[in-house]
Image 1 (tube, one colour):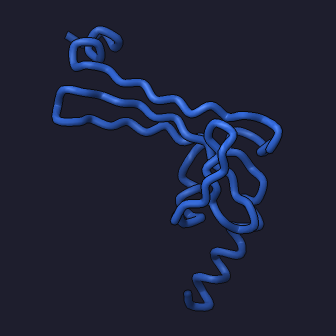
Image 2 (cartoon, one colour):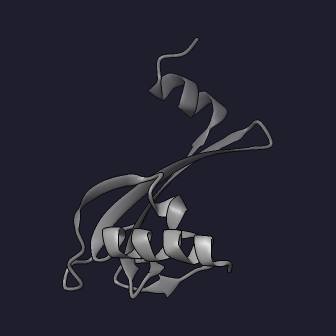
Length: 100
């Protein structure tokens, strides 16, 4: 990491540390299945930590990626943030959104 990248990373780490973020992603698989995933993240010691279902997982994420998801408050390690995964068939997805 060059000096410029380190400065950016240090700035983001101080700004994001201890905050709670939620990311909702939408996936389409083979045109037949639609899936929505809701995941929770925080920044701990300058690294992104996934905090789903009471388990902490440090992945290979960049801090700038955390800036692109929804900030929803402060992280509380005593709280359990439940991951959500919903899968829909093509027909169910159309019906759910009233698409004909």
